[in-house]
Image (cartoon, rainbow, N blue to C red; front, side, top):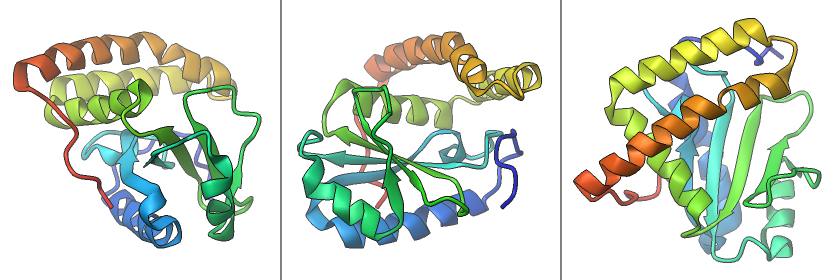
Length: 181
């Protein structure tokens, strides 16, 4: 398995990888998944990213873990109970397979909406997209062997972009488009 803890140039293959996995998830989850969206840096054309596909699944009741956990496990994803983020349920790929992060969130929640807004804003604001990529490269150079510091280091730029995205959302009347799958 290739080292995926690195920043790579944008790869159009990421979109196909998302669609392949999302199709499997859609078949498995059916109507339990209100939305299945490609999120994170690999979902933004032209943005350098860690080559890890992030998928957000929106459900009506995130707390009803038994409704979707087994279905996720049947198609090869492992529930990460130790995830400290209480705004989502987190699943990962089986060991030895391509890195995929799945974030199950409550439909309509702030965290679901903020994730989609952040993605949509960067898709149409190339200067901020470039600024974000430069900061990720800088942080990776500093914290190559310290993942928590890399993630924490992104906080200021992410919040700056979210603030700009919030203003933009009001100017354009943003709302999430249709689900990616």
